[in-house]
Every structure is written in C-alpha cells, then in structure tokens.
Length: 322
Ligand code: SF4
Image: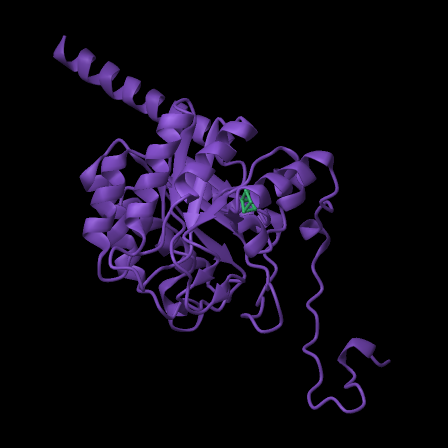
C-alpha cells in the first residue's frame, strides 16, 4: 500500500522524509485553555521569548495552562546549530536592555513561586551573555523576592570560569546545565560543545558555591546504549550534580536528528531507579520530562531531600561526639 505522505508530488525533486509515528505514551493535550492564551499574550506584550515555543515543547498545553513558562533570554537566534534543537541559528540581534525588567514583571504578573530562565548560545558576546543572566537574577530578586530562581545556561565556551563565577555571585537557587547526550554522540548531536567542558562547568558551580543546587539532563532515544547512560549518571555524580532529568528526544522537524528509539515508560522508570541508587537528591525520568517540566515542585522535593540529608549527618556526628 502506498503511503501518500512519502509520494513525491509532481514537479517536486525529493520525496518528503517519512514522519515518525509517536507511541501512545507521547500524546499530549492541545494548548487551548484561557490561561494558555493569557500566558502567550503576556509574553508577547513584554517582548519575551520562551523556550516552550521556540523548542516546540510537547508540554506547552499543560505548563502554560498552569502559567508556568520558561523565559529564553538573549534573543531567539542561537549561534550554534545542534542537531536536536529547534531554535533558529544565525547572527543574533543586539541584547535587549529591557529583558531583565520585563522578565521580572512577567514573573510577578504570573505569580510564580519558581521561575526557570534559559538562553540561546551567544558565542558572539565577550562574556557569552553571563552579564544578562546576572541582570535578570537581580531584577527578579528586586521585584519578586520570594520567587526561587533556576537558571539553565549554555556552556560559555572559552569563557566558562568568569561567566560561572559572575552568575553564582548573583545567587540563583538552582544552576542547570544539560549534558544533553552521551559523549559518543557529541560529534553528531552537539558538535559545537565538549562533554567534559560541560561537566567541568557543573563542577565549577559547586566549587564556587556548594549550596547552589546543580541540575543536568539528557535526552534518550538518540541511539545511546544503556551502559553509556549509566556512565553519564556516574560522571554527573562525580561532579556532585544534585538533580538529573531524563526525557525522550523528539524530532522537531525532518531536518533534525532522527529518533532512534522511543524509550518505554518502563525503561524510564528503570533508569530513574538506578539514578536514585547512585545518590541524586532528585530524579525526573519519563518520556515527557524536560529540564523545566514541574521544576517548581521538583525544587521543593530536592530542597527537602537535602535538609533531610543534612539533618542525618548532623544527627550521626552528634551521636559519635557524645
Ligand atoms: S516543560 Fe519547560 S519548556 Fe516545556 S512547556 Fe513546560 S516550562 Fe516550557
């Protein structure tokens, strides 16, 4: 039987790439609620970009209905071209000086208890965009002092140490930097980055301020092997990463890297159990897990887990001293 979607149209030179059928566990709700439209309008009115839209996140219907959005600062054009990412690539525009204040206004209007801020890669800027992260954190502390702040940064290639130092000084609650995939797949999936440089960034955050929670994530379904995933978990733990996220990679367009495998929910659970056994304070592992998915709730769980751990250590050292 012919699949019409793959039949070349008369006059067209190449057939369209076949669409990969998603399994049932990937299906998501369409974004239709009133709150979704309010979130969208607020972002437009304040000229803010979100990774929810730019990365074509499958959770946008759910998150925006709860008024959770992840603001993407430093514009909507990235200087890298990763094979998994839907964000536009090219020469970015000038940095918007109103972005920090507008981000804080958005957080206040949405009444956010926890906000996630990410950015495109800005290899064109002398500091990689670190000072804009600092300004956003400062504006949020000023306008919404009770909102906890999670940042998800690029790797700040060739300027990592001063960038991380400046951002840590501004005092985010959570510092996230994603390893994205296993080291073997970097040349094809994340060609502009280096696995060990990203790990070093995570280590650097902890050595600068051990109280900042660190978080990192990988996408599954890109062709990685199970033992390679376990190795990434060990590498993260050796960098003292507190929180690991694992989610299914989805191909944003036929031009992007292919999905090699739809990992089953059961396999995600198994990875989650292994990660917990390896000592992460918090683990999120499911097909629809994304770095910022349920970030506020997960932050509360991670904080409680650390307090419990500290209390146990204090209890046991008190016992041995007595
Ligand atoms: S999971 Fe993150 S990126 Fe996706 S819609 Fe929710 S907040 Fe946005």
